[in-house]
Length: 268
Length: 283
Image (cartoon, rainbow over all chains, first blue to last red; front, top):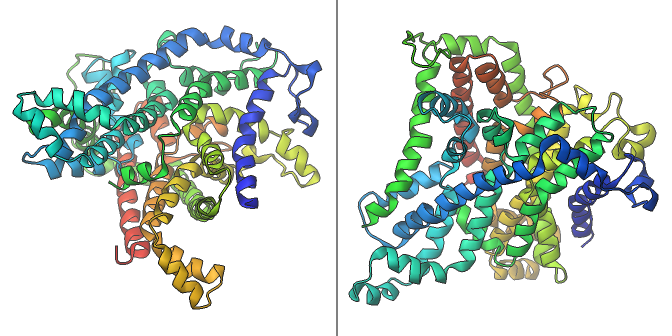
């Protein structure tokens, strides 16, 4: 029990500190500074960071990037998961093997060839499409979808097939609603990928008005501008804005986020 | 019908994984540089030249050495702490959801965001040094060439631990309760039943945890880029991916950078196989 409480403190304290730090007029790194001091609280840091990185624009960019990946995954990833679980066709085992293999290839290894291909051969530098493409279908989500579709008995769909429903309609109207918890888990796992991704959008966006928040904030951190009155506070304010949507989505979906699902999803 | 359903996914894998993988190998054996769009340039086959360049570059060797330091700290710490917390969580009666959620929060948060807090916490006059007082390292954590890489290893352990705790938690729930009962009938104490029942029971999860931790190490970029200001001090915390970025994109040598990538992936595969042999046992 002591280990659990200590663990929770170690995991949560930096988040608490992030919020406190983002509200301080003057950065106070002393022990007393970890407690809120009414005389030292302000929202100016949020105004400062907004002046530097345009939170609205970068949040929209993060949203488009993440939304594109979610759309691709829910549309095509669910189809692949459904076929792998419920349909018979040649090469089914190979495709599933591929989905597992993809997890072992460090993505970062591919950045050089992907960078050359996407910016040079396909001419997609500084575009949302180029940003989305390498992440368009999340393989972990495909595996989670398959795992859940496998648990649905095949006879369930036979009646609908006899009635002449198309396979796509069966998947959308019967199968998908039955695996709603998996859908939430898959959406959360897919969401945190592009929302938190730094390296890839950083490489392919040179225009500031296309950059997602993670990239804009990282650029701000790496050449900490002396223009802000309180750079630490401004960074922490930006960090709060970047962290909030992912944490909120996690808290909303954590009920369906049962440990066993994730385990089986990853183990395949 | 099934074929039609998986076609988009297969095309995606081919375009985004298979082809770039082959292309990375091709790049690493040729002399490639960025030319003006549309210009026809000769890209001669150069054999192992790029590999020779990479392996004789002290910065690259240092980066691979740094990853070894990273793994030596990160892997045992991750396995020990996530198993400890998962075991405690498995036994806990109250507040399971609260603990599970709090351990998972760092995992779902962007590295860029939490790096901001760690910079503040571990700066020279930061809270950690304030608490340590005279014990604070000088130079401070992130600008100290001995401590920079261990601090990054600690950061990544902290950030990823929640995910590994969940993996172990799932594995623990599959260990048959009867085994614990018969162990206690045989007079085993807590430590003995942990060693003879729990550890073998979660072995498949351990194989997976070690493999994923190694992949994380091979992928390291954001932390050395931001936390230690580009792999500093003097490359003491540079990672191979950071060097790939600097060589391949900043300095326009994608052929050399691709060679680093190929070496990296071969390294990961070799370590993964050894790991399977060593920890995998009969699995």
